[in-house]
Structure formats: structure tokens, C-alpha cells
Amino acid sequence: MKTLAEMDYSVLQQCMHCGMCLPTCPTYVETKEERNSPRGRISLMRAIADGELDVTKAFGEEMYYCLGCLACTSACPAGVNYAELFETARAEVEKTGVLASPKRDAIRWFALRLVFTRPRLLRVIGRLLRFWQVSGAQTAFRKLGLTRLLPANLRKLEPQAPAVMAKFSHQLIKPVERAVAVKRRVAVLTGCVQDLVFADVNRATVDVLLANGCEVHTPPVQPCCGSLHAHNGDMESARELARRQLELFDPFTFDAIISNAGGCGSHLRHYDHLLADDPVYAARAGEWSRKLRDVSEYLVEIGFRKPTGAAKEGTCVTYHESCHLCHGQKVSRQPRDILKAIPGVELRECAEATWCCGSAGIYNITQPETSSWLQERKLGHLRTTGATVVATANPGCHLQIENGFKAAGETTSVVHPIVLLARAYQAESAL
Image 1 (tube, one colour):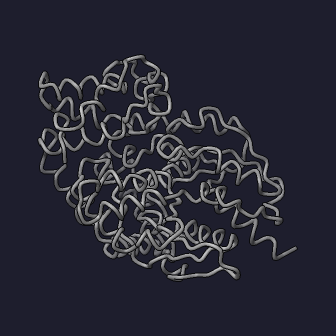
Image 2 (image 1 turned 45 degrees about the horizontal axis):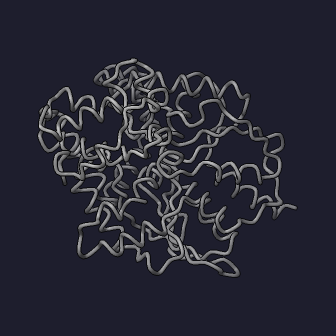
């Protein structure tokens, strides 16, 4: 992994210091401190590249205070590649060890190097968590007040633990499924958290692709895409996981590679950059990036069939944009096009729809105060719409918003836009 001093210096020079990014950056809006802005962070990165500053603990903490939401890239008139700068800076923080501690190192090893590099192990952990949730053990643990025995940070997170599904993606989806009249051949990525917690979204994704003339390939055991690793400075693991994906899916044999998770998709699109110097995988990674599509983007691209089945009568929907879907992948209109095409859906726009909800990968764990502030800001805007359903296309956003409503005792439901489309197709059979 290149350091800030070794990377292409023109990337560091792109920032004009115009300040257009400032009002779009959640951390700057919260603190009004220059160092908490994209412009300020880039200045720090450039100073390190120039040898004027050393990588310090304070620099490391600042890089991890950044949400990585990429709202600054949408606002930037100079086209600054903040994503590359951000990931390079975090990788250098990890390389220098300025934030290292026995506890932090153990957590990173367990999560990044062990669990999220072994999909079968992750499923075993998912099964255990599912048993804990449905056996009554979790309920008893809470009623007896045993949560007070947990460390303070875990005590706050325990109520937010996602409900694991009874069946995972490989139990709901066959490795190959074909439409009656096949026009296209695609591969579907099932993800990590998505596989355990939102396998129904993966099933819905396959269903809508089948309804639009696709032959769908969904390998039953898929590795993590590596986004969690890249965003946390572990580029070695990110590259290894990208190679595993390319071994599992030959992009030259598909019309498209389909992702349905905004955060994963943003990272998956850049395998070409991630493996640009790999003599074995560079060409395949280039083809992969060329064919990677968000599911809503792909459906609009091929001219998806408008459903004739209606959504639930009186369904009022608002749409929250996943940061990495709208800012990272530049996919914003297409999910709305899908929602508007569903009979019975009234789409109400939400203020600050492109603002981060505070999930940002594991940001709600590492920066709970800022995450909570952003969550409440987002929920306030969602409530103002009066919508009974919030549509969003990223598992982290889904859980953050759902947990916020649940904590407030509200019944607003959160769904993926593709799930609503799949339900509309299913409703056609009742006509």
C-alpha cells in the first residue's frame, strides 16, 4: 500500500481550498472546526506527504472521525478523489500503529482478519446469534437486567443488534435461476451482513431480475467484498478478498455483476484501481469494474418492466439515499424511478435525503455521539414527510434508521426499494 508521500501527488494537489465541501460535511457542520472538514483533512494529508508533519495519534483520530460519506465529492468542483485520499490516510495510520493498543488490535484481528474473511464462520456466528434471539435467552437476559454487566459501549449497542433471519441467501436462492425467456446473464452478490440479516432482499433482487428476462447466477458461498477492510485501513485484506471474488465470478462471462448494497457497491466498483498493479488480476478487475452495477441502476438501464400489481393500498414512501450509493456510485435517480413505477406508491421527498444517517459502516460503534446526532437529524426529516415507509438501499442505513424508530416506539417500516418492486410483481398473480 502506497503512503501519502508515495501516492500520485496530483491527487493531493486537486483541492483548491474553495470551501464548497464545508456545508456538506456532517462533522464540520457539527463542530465548525476546519480540521474536521474535508479541506482541513486534505491539508493535513498534504503536510504529511510533504514531510512537514508526522503521522500522529491526533491525525489518526481525525481520519477515523471522518464518516467517509463522500458528500464532499459530490460538492467538489475540482473533482478531488477524496475516497483514495481517505483510504490511503487510514492505511498509513494503521501501518504506523499510532492508534494501536492490545484491545483495538484484538478487535481488528477478530473482525477484519478472522470473521469477515471467512463466510462460513460468519454464518456459524449468525446461527448462534439467531438461536440466542429466538430461544428466549436474549429476552431473559434483558428482563433480568443482565445487560448492566456489559461494558458501557456494548450496553448501548446491545438493543441495536440486528435480527438474524431464519434462512440465509443460499437457502433461499438456487445457484442458477433462469427466466422463462432469457435475454441477459447476470451475477448477484449476496454480501456479509446482507446475507445474514437481509437475505430477503437478496431473494427479491433475484426475483426482479428474473421478471426482467435474466439468467441469475448466485454462488452459495461468497466472500466479503472487502469494503469494511479498505475503509479501515486494511488494504492487504481488501485486495485478497477482491481476488477471491474474481476467482468466484468471471466477469467476462456476465452481462453485469449486480450489487444491492450501496456501501459494498461503491467499493466493488473500484476493483480496477485496487488491483491495478496485480499482473494476474488487473485485466479481470478492469472488466469487473466495467460491469458492476447497482440493481436499481441496472434495471433502469435495461428498461425494466413496469409492474401492474399494486403495492399495499395507500403506501406513502420516502427515500433515504445511502451515501455510497448517491455520492460514491452516483446512483440517485434510479431508485426513485423504480419507486414511482410501482402502482399505489406515493413518493414523498425527504429534506437532506443525501445526508448521512450516522451508520457509515461501523461509525455508530466507533463514534456513537456523532452517529446519534446524525440519526436524530435524519429521523426528524423522515418524520416530516409523513411517510409510513422509508425506502433505502444499504443494510447499514436500514438498521440505523430502523433502530432509531424502534427506540422512539414508532412503527414506520424500512424496506429496500427492490423489495417493494418484487412485491408488486408478486401481486400481479392475484389480478
